[in-house]
Length: 159
Image (cartoon, rainbow, N blue to C red; front, side):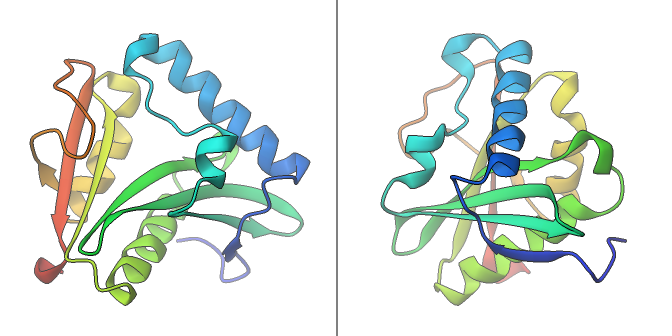
């Protein structure tokens, strides 16, 4: 389980540590998925109205990030969840996910959905989402069917 010293707070999209984490995230997405199947938000996407971005940090290090995109008054989308490679396997992904789901409930969303990759690289993320109650669903919002994508949703009433 992550150390209690980890703090999740609004992310600073000008912080070089955050920029490095996001650059690593986009590089991994581009190296594992065809260009048309990369749905990760870039900096402009993370700055867009309706997107809230957080980072997890401890000891002056940015260890992970996550975003929540407003789709409609009842539906949010999990975006840009990333845990630094050196920090994986310590429960930080669960901490970030729980933070977003608590915020979604606070906003009175009834559902949170996400898109992730279908490749083996994304298997740990898919396992985390499944353990949290997410189930496969049809493409939502502006997504189209894609063999490189897995679409998942969580009915917050089931939590």
